[in-house]
Length: 288
Figure 1 (cartoon, one colour):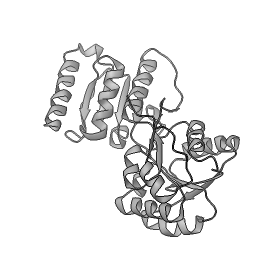
Figure 2 (tube, rainbow, N blue to C red):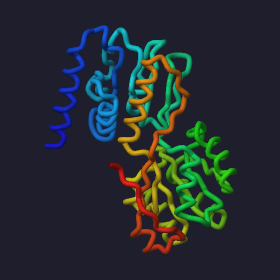
Figure 3 (cartoon, rainbow, N blue to C red):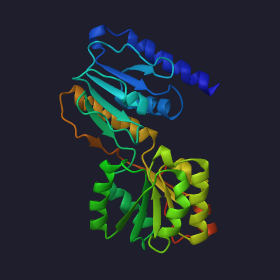
Figure 4 (spheres, one colour):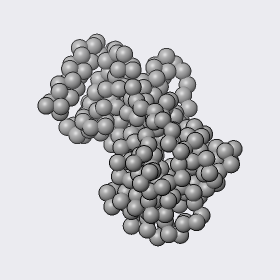
């Protein structure tokens, strides 16, 4: 029933947009898939934007015919961001954590899957006042856009970031053993190549056995043993895309990287208590 309701809402939005004059279709929303997180974020974007935007579902049409007068695209997912767009179009993309665009084509604006580094570290310091060494797991070559900013914020906060690039989830056990005693907590970035049920189990069990907090890339992953997650939810991400799109259409300039406002803190209090993790239980910051 929920899927059918989503589909009806999607089709209603599409029909509303297609009823606009051709010249008014300066924008489009491209979804890697018209369901799940992509669809939820699109709906949050549509609500924040306040006017209908043509949606295209790439799971149903891999080569959609986009409006000819397109000025800006809201792209949700890697496939949506990587679609071939004409030069002169601004592509505002989200939910594509490891995608790096070809800057010779259209202009790209990345909505970060991670919160602003300074606020992230401040939040984890509130949870763990003794945090001085934070190990960060990611795939080589991914998240360069974020790690340099994180290093700068960490120096100001008195924290050392221990970068730990991994090639596959199979590398986690050896990496964790080598870092034991050299980290106060570890943080997994939202890297699809490293996240599966096995790797989450390994990270959760290591965290509990060694009393080293595991910070997850999204709130939902605290269900797999992570102590906490501080990350933008789909509402914050959708609102950030909408704000950026309005700026583009108004003729404003945007940076290449935008951090969504009001990231959400999720805490796994049961794991913290069970494992005796050195964390302070502060209130969660639930999405409204």
